[in-house]
Image (cartoon, rainbow, N blue to C red):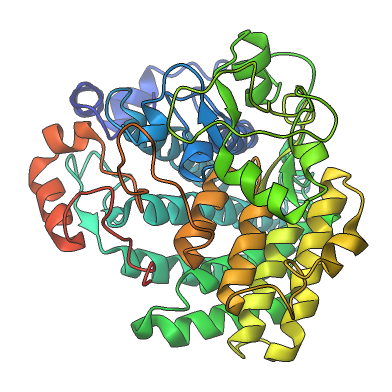
Length: 481
């Protein structure tokens, strides 16, 4: 039974099911163990995390709308920033806490409880725990970046803390750096091996992922004056420790043709037979202006060869007269990434411009590598002419270095809605459209789940006050501009 922290019903279950260990042990059947194998939990948590970040089901994930890459054809509540009708914020909160973080925490407990043997060495145990930590940090960081202050120190102990307090977001983030720094050196063997759906247990690949995640997090807080030293240390140690160097390093999970292991986008759009989305004019207009060759792989040419028209963001957009999602995106086997080489290069360009890692003279090279990595990953052609385009070329493209990096990072994060939205939150680029129905400003965070307001009211109220109000437009601590 999972220790679900978000509903009163589960709280009652948790409290009522606590028994004295001596009596509990008498009722256990040694031939049918109740302890779930750590490998199973790790695999399950990994899939849950990737599925959640990849899905386009509007009940659970609307990040492609927040990043204004897609818009809707029939039900436009989500593109108009209605978080509550479908209880969307609760779905993300629940999935991350219950099916990712809790499963990883239980996998860690079970790993620690497994005795050392000839087939389970200390190196294997340490490597498994390090893999668990990296994914846990990823999930915790996502919650902080999405909501702000969150339950952290008391979150996974409902026996002691039925209603957990919310920890300060910056404090949580600082602790996540400590956890990453402790975990990465312990990656010495294949850990979970074939039970690892991202890297098959490769220690070197996990080290690159851990360092690349640390680089991302360091860039996130680079504009926070009180965390400048932490940011510089994170960025420099990440780069010296080794970040992604090619698309082969991407933190990606493969999907198959067989359910339930198909890509969630295929499930939501093809298997369901739905036509709920078209490409948003925010993205189409931007790429049309640049004559971006990636349009041929990002989009379908359902309007004719080379013709791309985006639906008006936030309005009811006719499915037949606007550009569709490409068949690459809707392929059931299309891999999904938690982090990729293109993204890393844009962060390296940022770090160079800040003279944290390298010098500003190196930024153009990383910028070009980021764009090139995106083209290569998608199988797009025409990279040389694109980089020579005066609107793209690092020396001639309009705006500051933040504008240039922000624009191209946002483009490269297509089909990764959360990172597209976060690129906009980080660099305030490109300029987004206001949704045509509600006219609301683009959210800078998710509001807290309604269940927290109802069931954990005292701690919710304190957290809401601490962050400046539980509003969609309240900025998380690292979003300074």
